[in-house]
Length: 491
Image (tube, rainbow, N blue to C red; front, side):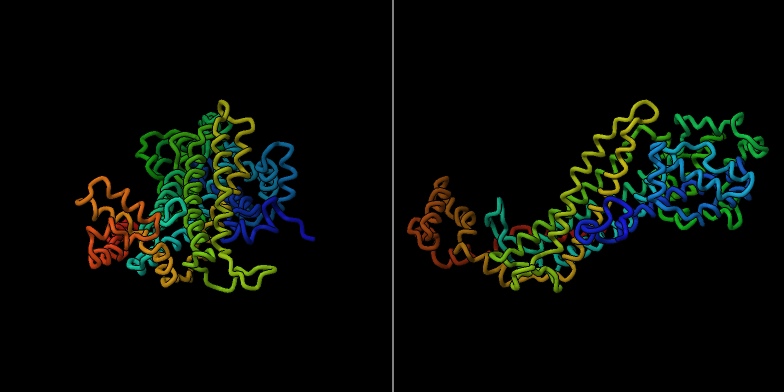
């Protein structure tokens, strides 16, 4: 039997870790991100004059071609508390000659691990946003198509007032769209490179510490070194170096007159990776992880709300929606068609709050480097990416091909024989009965004769009552609200 590469690979993945985010967060994906970070560090050293491009190319070649067994790396990590140390040893062994000294120069293990975490998060969030965006589009389509489809609005799980399925879908849309916007903001501005050295001072890049003839030449002119300075194939930073708005270092970047080598390395490293450039190393300032966790948790909550509604609307006694496709069968009951995609989305999303709480609880990091809380982030963050990603993937599948039973919606609306319009009837009686109108209508509803109660018919004739009992006339501003939701999503 093949052994799983991580505790969260295997039996439950089809339900709780489905979709493309899983592949973006495997052990192999994490190792690849670590290698990408080390390669970018070498290229940044060349761009700032701290190394030759030939040496940087040697490191890049080694990182690109290195085959690493994540299980073996993890076992060796027990000796140092991080997989970066044994990985650096492997890279150095793969780099020929003096260029091996460039590997990991000036960095600490947390620099590489945190940067790799940001790379993994960005790749995973990109995949998650594709599914979340598709769910936004599907709910927008439902809102527009069903803007006039009447159904019972329910409060505290009881029928309350008429609404439209279009307005219900518009409510789903606004939650999902808000989650998408927040995740996009975090992706573009809060996923930052990490480079600070052992204690966050970048001391290893000071002129007196930077060895080699290149260091002496690195002065103010190094700040002007852009991508064109690193011409040639060895300088190619990979597909992410020029990708998206986050490739420009974001709001934290500003014109920098300083020629401090450490600061120049931080800028070059961030640019090579296409990650935001932080003002300072954030080894023990973990609001970036908290922002990512919060955005993922909010997305999971927005997804779970839609999934929960779909599950409730698909109940046999309600039967207003059903998932398309052939899935949802039972092992013993041939007649069952369970809303399995919505159920799986809700199940995956339900894991998010605890994982968010764990990441927030791990925020207090001691002094300049943490003793334990940093390590405590790794697994919960991966699990949070996977659970939220799976929830988005499953919800997209649930919404795609959703069957809406408009006839059943109308039939359920009529179950109360007009009681759903009791508020409207009470409003029509108020000019005649004043504050007693509510009690009169409540009594008629309790007796099951709202339309024929003498206390009501004495003031409202048959034609007036028939109009009041038409639910289409009591959906308020539903249409205008749907339009607002659609316009906001399109912006």
